[in-house]
Length: 340
Ligand code: ASP
Image 1: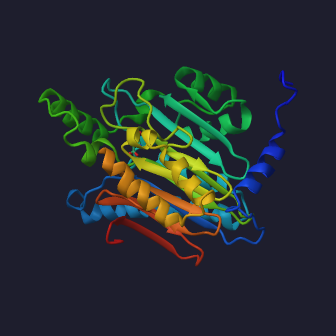
Image 2: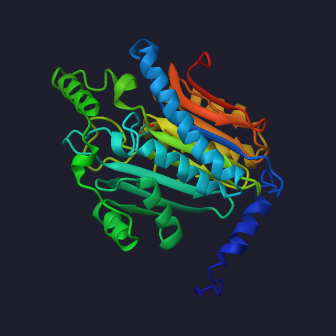
Image 3: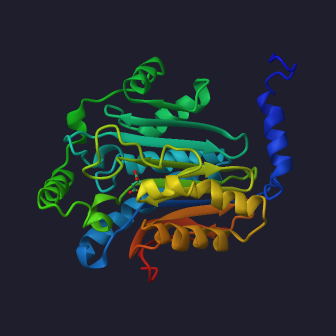
């Protein structure tokens, strides 16, 4: 009990208060589930062979179905988010888990976060180097610790207590990411640092948002961050409100140049505009992702779903790996702006 006699509120009371405040989130037991995932923004059509497009699309579809199957079975949105993200973390084509990019110091340092819109509980990890599925560790932080964000060695020590397996750092070595780092280092040496920022320093981050049968929302994001990032750099993905956020009425996972998502507190801003100001999801999302962030010099995209099952997938890059099942139950996978 604190000095003023106001003790901590029980979590259930906080959740009820949140649901009352954010009237966008009228949870209904008969809700039609909706699932949206992304595999990162920044992809350029000319850089992708048709064969590679097919490989990536098949991987996105596998992740989408993993999440959507959980939703159809009546599992909570947070289960679907973790199921989808784990598939992408295990796939070397994405900048998360197995396919994480390299830091300037030739390491792989990963960040991840999850948020449960029904309870406003959240968990995140940053700078982990030996965790095969950082999203699972983020969920454990949310559900089995009193904290929201654990970093580096401390996060990995917590993983051990949770029986979440650690892997040798060599697990994360891939030729493609190594070559990307070499290219970035050459650019650094030529003093053209960040000249190629939008094309291959950040893309491939993965994320998921879901609306479950109970009408609850969740969001999650997992990433290796940006190629050539400094040791200890943390992006937007594990920062609740920047790259990841969910409440009773809106859920978002972002991807792009993280520093700009942090500075605009992008996910929180969009979700507050939707739930407090009753702005249309697509309008709020387009405004922040396609106007506010580029006006500051940033780029990227996001996926969002609201409590009505409306979806938004804005991006200001030429492509964003994405897949979704809306209220009509039909699966879609797309990479570029033309919906292909
Ligand atoms: N947003 C991520 C970061 O800045 C990178 C990405 O989305 O590709 O760490």
